[in-house]
Amino acid sequence: MGQALRIRNHPVIDFKKKKKISFYFNKKKIFGEEDDSIASALHATGVKTLSTSLKYSRPRGFFCGIGKCSSCLMRVNDIPNVRTCIVPLKEGIFVETQDKLADLPKAEFTGKSKKTVNVDILVIGAGPAGLCAAIESARQGAHVLIADENQYVGGQLIKQTHKFFGSKQERAGIRGITIAKELENDLRELEKDGKIELMLDSTVIGYYESKKKHKLAVVKRYGYENRLYEICCDVVILACGAMENMLLFPGNDLPGVYGAGAVQTLMNVYGVKPGEKVVMVGAGNVGLIVSYQLLQAGIKVDRVVEAAPFIGGYHVHAAKLRRCGVPILTSHSVKEVFGDGEVEGAVVVRLDENWQPIRGSEEKIDCDTVCLAVGLTPSARLLSQIGVEMEIIPEAGGYVALHNDSMLTTVKGVYVAGDSSGIEEASTAMIEGEIAGFSAAVSLGYKKNENVLSQYLDELCRLRAGPFGEKSRTAKKKICKLMGKKK
Image 1: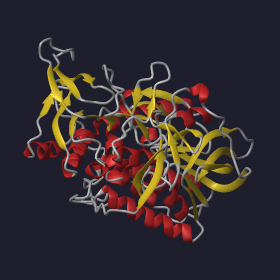
Image 2 (image 1 turned 90 degrees about the vertical axis):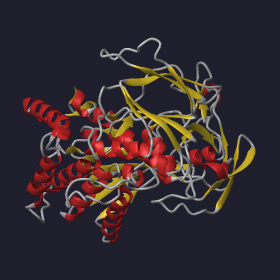
Image 3 (image 1 turned 90 degrees about the horizontal axis):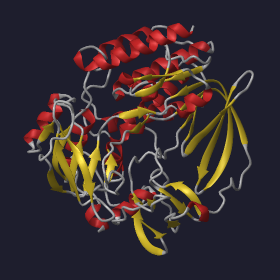
């Protein structure tokens, strides 16, 4: 089963067979591969159920792939609530499912005491926005620490095998995975020069009031032990990304129902198939792009269903799918998903002009995977804790931090960038990161290049031009208008 689910032949990514790693799942010895996460290793062996719900003991599986949901929480070496989708696999570990919360042992910080770190700027998140923010701040002369809870830098870029659109400045014609490597190389050079410190496997767990500096608590994983850090900084830039949206329908919690980002993580990071036959829900850019990536991995896409009466993504992406024989059905949605312990099929239904199911139009489809590409919600919990003014802006994806053109929020010394400031493309996230990084450094008195800010603002304006940028333009106008009222 494990070999069948491993992707070995791919037109873009070279998934070489790696060193075997043995570990134990519920006392049974199984094998993963070097660079697996615990959850991807389990998935490759055919284990789709990672946890069960507390009240009804319903099975739960890999859903978000970025540590934002609770579906993958397991006990590892007797430590409970380990987010197995982002924790790397190690030789000889013991992994167990958690059935009842009452039976969990106490988890404590072990081995090392708290350590305090002082920096000019803390960047939270090493995705496209966070990387660009950290690099730009360091280039202006600031001392920067960048923290991310994953074992890799790059965020969503490390999953994106498609080529970017736009101009040369926006890296048009370059794949996301290549952009991630280029940004990491820039980061590593600045790290060698002592201008940037990098903390991976590190989760920011809280913000604490201080008279002069911002103080944040960070837990860094060392294997399966933790160390607590107190980070003191003059400025903090939050580039925390976003979370997958969910749809309500019977069976939406079955293992085999994934967010689109989780499917990309399994396929394009770990080289593991999410399944063999997929129904894609959502015909925006993400749904169309991930559908094509599924085909590249040798996985059948039965169809793409879209509740709206039109395709929301670029038609060039839709055309590629249609040339491959994948139908895209607008005014359609999933009515239910069924299966004994995991997805075995789905019922698709046609919608009327009021977005209501049309009785008698149901169609039963055999599949083992349902992929939800139904939008993202900005990750805003830490921003809320800091006390940043927040508002619900539907065009931005929901609850977002108010900020100005320099990405400064309503709290002095707190900046935001990328999907945390409103859902957009990776290209805009990178430019917002550069704007936030430059502005943050300037606020501390650093400034080596005075011309870059106007260049970044012009690039951002160009990216948001045209009909596909209307939603983003509307969102940013609302945010800046509300920000102006707070002054």
